[in-house]
Image 1 (tube, one colour):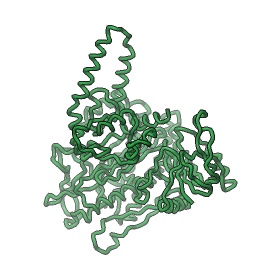
Image 2 (cartoon, one colour; image 1 turned 60 degrees about the vertical axis):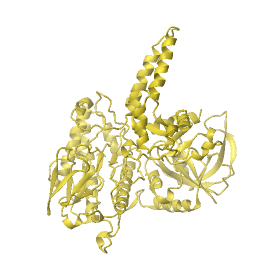
Image 3 (cartoon, helix red, strand yellow; image 1 turned 180 degrees about the horizontal axis):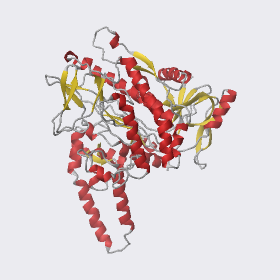
Image 4 (cartoon, helix red, strand yellow; image 1 turned 135 degrees about the vertical axis):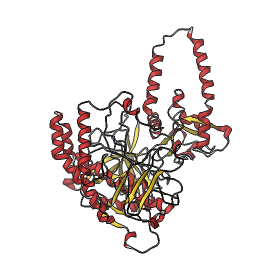
Amino acid sequence: MATYLFTYNPNKWEWNFQDDIAEINLNKFCNATWSAGVTKKIKPDDRFFLMRLGKSPRGIMASGRVTSDVFQDVHWADESKAALYVDVHFDTIIDIDRLAIFPIELLQSGEIYSEVNWTPQASGMSIPDDVAKHLEEDWAKFLNSPKPLLQVEYTDKIDDGKTSSENKVKPVDVRDIRFDKQDLEVFKIPDVNERIDTLQKHFFPRLELLIKDSLELVEEVYGIDPYVGMINVYRPNNRKKAVIKTQSGGIYVGRSGKRRNSRKDTPLAIKNATGKSIYIHTVYLTFDVFPEGCIGVYFVPFSNSIDAAFVEIVRKEMQLNLDLLSTIFSSLGIRYNSSISKNAKDFHKLINTNHFDLSEGNDINSLCFYTESYFFPANFKDELWNLKTAFVGLYPLLDLFVSIGEDRENHFAEMLNKFHDWYYKKELGQLEKISDILENIEEKSSDLSIESLENIEADREDIESKLDFNPENLEDARERTNRAIVQRQGQSKFRSELLKAYGEQCAITDCDAEAALEAAHIFPYLGTDTNHVKNGLLLRADIHTLFDLYLISINPDTSKVVVSSTLLNTCYKELNGKSLKPPQDYAASPSPQALARHYETFLLKQNE
């Protein structure tokens, strides 16, 4: 018996799975027909898992067995074409409108699952037997839990070789989340004042209970009073320093690296008397509970100098944060996307902040309080200042909103009052303009803005659409073309930046012949604004051409090369599934939005 991965993408076909769930509840099974992709070797009694892709939530939502050999019939999306199918027997379909899906993040981050591409372009991919065995076990645990929540483990310290209860991993059950889709109905109340009043009386108190539950877990696991044993420190700017008062005296807190040149995403460095830096992971937190919004957690990269054991513990801690937040999102009925990098330098989770409208002059349309929070015991001792015993106890939801003052007992009231004030202003159209806010921000993000690129393209199309045909303009057009060629060839700075970022090697083939390497634009070239290192890849000339023609792309979820089916019988088939080489400097990492846009166009062209 073999095991296969079938796929379902609601962007391509809307499946009324509620009827099938009702049939399973009645008969304990449901029969259906499903696409087999291009796989002809599927046999009756083979096992399958169904992966939901496209829209969030993404993950495994169903399982069953195959009940027929592969057969051919009319293509489900194009009656002029044929497709391969199998009959299937569903034993489980998760009602993702009410319950949590088995999240794709657990598959993409787990070591045993790393050899499988969990975002295939079509159904019918086989799952190796050893991976299938683990998946069956994890799937059973997931379905048999009292609630569709995850069993997680927390650890409070790195194992420093000593035998003590403090160094033992302690299993903890994730608490019941007190929200469901009905709770969000309050945001649909037409009258603003009535809506705010309902939030005050019903929604906020339940949110407060959720936060308190999180704090109680900290106390359970770490034995620390969350009100008096934790210190919340906000990052000082480049020209200031902060002193944390602890029982052992003052500790200087500053930014690592050169004071004036330190990057925005440099983690906080806590320095002891000898000047040695101790790194603690940091977090940018955004929170939004509106149906049209999402929740985001953004973990800042670490320095390469961090001890490997420390890195591994923090990686696990951050995955726990994402697991818990994913459970909360599902409970709230909020659709979201998430990712976690496997690169030790880039502990990054970003949950769909694409809806933020940062266009000039527009109102803020999402609750977007960016904070950086560092949590550690207040009773640090000098002898504990080393990486082996650094505290790793950052817990999600401790700071859902920006709070002020040192009185932890009033922490929740301050958070909720801030939320109340923000939401009320939002509904009455009294929020500040983005342009006004930017004037007060000293550090601006260097991330490439897809919105700005779209604006450039729209302006160009608008101008070109207004040009009438005139033979006398043809000479001018040739001149413009010649100038454009010279301009593209003369993008030396852009190419130099990419050569440096990728160590003078092709990001896909590792070719190190500099003369053959070109600066490729991920989002098509539209002027100097697109000559941004995050909108570029250093590619061998032939790969550059194929990339521009959308015959090769990068899957933004896996950072792996995807080759068009038209090239699978050529020498380029060897590139399919190859991992994209990361740049030497994290700041030069390709824009996820730009990669996603290129990949979307690539997929559209595959179906033409």
